[in-house]
Amino acid sequence: MPFALTAPDLANATLFVVPIYAYGWHRINEDRSWSHSGEVSPPPPFRLRLLEFFKSVDLPTVVFGKIEEARHPLNNRWVALFPVMDDSSVDLENEAANFGTLICPARPDFDPTVRPVNDPRIVNTASTPNLRGISVACTRRDPISAKLGRSCSLPGEE
Image (tube, rainbow, N blue to C red):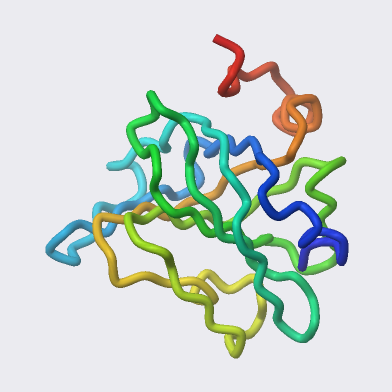
């Protein structure tokens, strides 16, 4: 599922990202070993500054950005988000959706040749440590709470 064709217009916008517990969060450590699902807690929610959209087959498929959360343990880390479903397009402004999530110290790489486009290998990084899992994201808070079926504490609500 790519992003809506208008998604690149959101460059420099802020996205609220809520990592989902129990969706296979794992860490690749400095020595390249893996801490598997169940051993790694998802990071706390954060605001993400959208910096770059990448296209595959002329459709916005992956977005890169940086965490902008001064008190967040992963502040200034790079994040890549890519839709995990393949049957529609995501409107980041009006709907919350699930995204494959990569969080790492250096800008990740995008491989437009990977198929299907929702394969986690579409984004990668050599920088460690890094985290991978699933998150819910949207530019607005209400759709996230509605998708999760509960109210959740998001950045900026303290």
